[in-house]
Image (cartoon, rainbow, N blue to C red):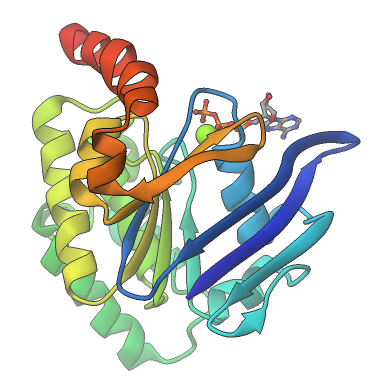
Length: 243
Ligand SMILES: Nc1ncnc2c1ncn2[C@@H]1O[C@H](COP(=O)(O)OP(=O)(O)OP(=O)(O)O)[C@@H](O)[C@H]1O
Ligand SMILES: [Mg+2]
């Protein structure tokens, strides 16, 4: 469904992605892992057209999308939920969600998408008329994921949806992502919570120094010595101990 080949990109003249190749099959959940600052968000931004791919190709649903504008890519059914839980605090939950449907002109479709989002996140329905600025971190993340679903994409890219959330909320978010995928969504998920990501995903990639260092089934990565040492031993254990 998504096929990235030899992608090179960066900021200004600084090269961050040094030829990344990655595939996501339809209906799969794929995890993109890697340390801080290795270029995971940069990769998602290049795929969704927010930064320019310098070379290589990105094919989505059989069409080349590298070089297309972000709104065109959204219209083709590929949506990114950016890192950092951004929503307009002075707008209500429902207004923020509706922003995600800016590319959809059909009112019935938007209404149906809104109900679907409320089905996944009932607490957002309860709070639909409240200002987003009053939400907890977990609820704000739900708004961001929900907003991504509002254009009824066929694939969603999530950038660290569990970051800075309490363990119980993390579990909730992962369960819902699992449900969304089971309902037919293809998912590419960037995560620091490597253990949870590998439990959720079918396949995983590890990005290091702007290239894919390791890839394999989630099952294989979970037992890979390098992954265990670098991402499951130190980092995750420490993080869990801190929570
Ligand atoms: N807008 C920007 N302009 C210039 N450099 C940037 C910009 N955004 C990120 N970078 C740099 O690009 C590199 C990769 O950043 P990126 O955000 O893609 O990493 P990441 O893997 O998502 O990290 P994290 O796990 O911390 O989110 C970093 O060295 C970062 O400083
Ligand atoms: Mg990032």
